[in-house]
Length: 302
Image 1 (tube, one colour):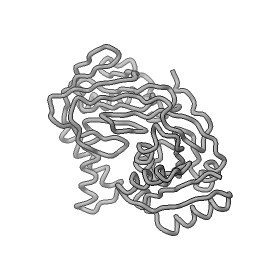
Image 2 (spheres, rainbow, N blue to C red):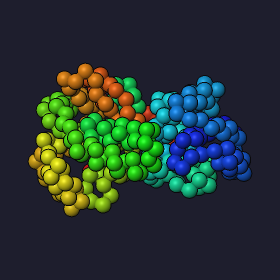
Image 3 (cartoon, rainbow, N blue to C red):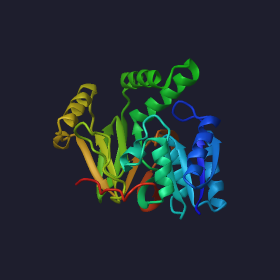
Image 4 (cartoon, rainbow, N blue to C red):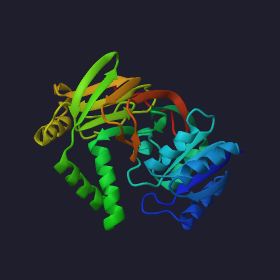
């Protein structure tokens, strides 16, 4: 019988508590699985996952949002321990892109059923990410949102709106030198976005992926767009004409290097902001993470 350890993030979504942990425990036990359910918070999530691997757990399940899944995946990538997901966060992009069940009972059943597949993860200067990593506007928005939540007491969504308005008011630009596919790109841009596999950047499914087994990173950036031009690019994306924009770059590559004159850059990886010293060395780690509870991921669209 597989040994399953579930790490539930108390801070994810609308808050998770012992009552939820008991419900999760009951669902696994009813399905005939040996399980240990642990409540954790913040940096404890990764530490608990590390302990589970050291104690030879067969499966470590991340109970929370994308940040929680990312913290556990960073521990499991490159190992033989499988990752399970209980999508208890607000958006759950990773679970949706892999086609994992979003209902708690269905997610538990799929993990116990034991279907596994290998997927890719991205990495920047040694830090693993499962969804994306970005510079510029988004890290600024995340930092301001957290400041408003902490100091002013705003809820997550109101804080996000105010943080977005504040970032667009400042609208800072980055001067970066990007190397990919043997080419050099000099850009003055408000954002650099690098995804684990290819993101849809056009139509009403924008921001989604067809799968995470394509073996590539995706780079998206724009050259010198003002606020009005940024709105125009968004409209182009919705009508499916973004790829024709001359000042918008879309590059698929296994490795990407970002250089800057700044001594440190704020980098948002799966929604967590850290400071990193350039150059930022991005690479894809193909098939390095085992995920349990899903059929084989689809290849990204061409």
